[in-house]
Image (cartoon, rainbow, N blue to C red; front, top):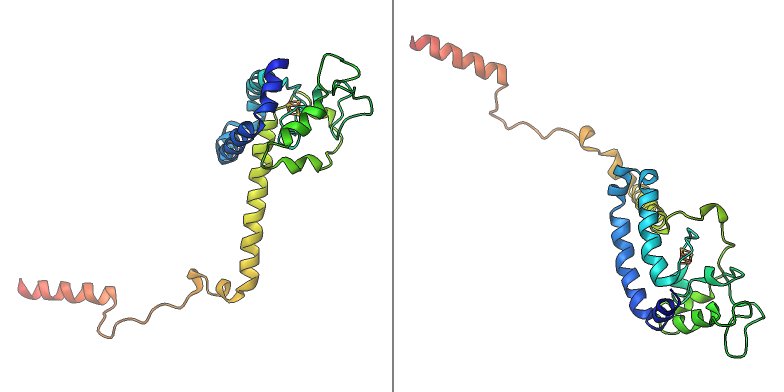
Length: 203
Ligand code: SF4
C-alpha cells in the first residue's frame, strides 16, 4: 500500500531497530527451523512474510531483501527494478518517469537512509537480482546464512586455538597419565578377599 510504504520511509529508523531486533531471533531459531526442515517451512513462512512485508513495504518477494540498505524503500517497486540507484528519468518533483504519481523509490531510499543508523549501507553496490529466488522467503534465507556464518566462524576459532596450543591436544583426557595411587590403597579384589576371610573366621 503506497501510503504505508511512504510512512515506513518517514519512520525508517524505527523500522531499522525492529529489524535489528528481529534478525537475531531468526538466527537463534536456526535449530528449530532445521528440525522442522527449511524446505518444509518455506511455503508457510513465505506466505506470512508476503502478508506482512506486502502491507508495510509493497514487498514483491524478490527473495533477497535489501531494505536495510535502501532506507526501507523497496527497490523492486521501481518499474525498472533498479537496485543500485535511480535511472536518469527522475522528474523535477522527485517522481518516477514511468509512474508520474509515484515518488521515485530511490528518492525515498535516500530520504529513509538519511534517518537510519546504518544508512551509509546505501552506498554498497548490490548484486543483480537473482530471479531464481523470487517468491522465496528472505527471512529463512537470512536465518540459514547467518547461522552457517556463525558456525563457520566458531569452527575457525577452534581451529586457531588448536593451532596456537598444539600441546593442549596432545594431552586429551583419555591419554592423560593416571594419578598415582595412595600408598595404603589395596586393589579391589584383594580387599574383597580379606573381607571374606574375616567374615569366615568370625563364623
Ligand atoms: S527487497 Fe525484495 S524482499 Fe525486500 S521488500 Fe523488496 S521485494 Fe520484498
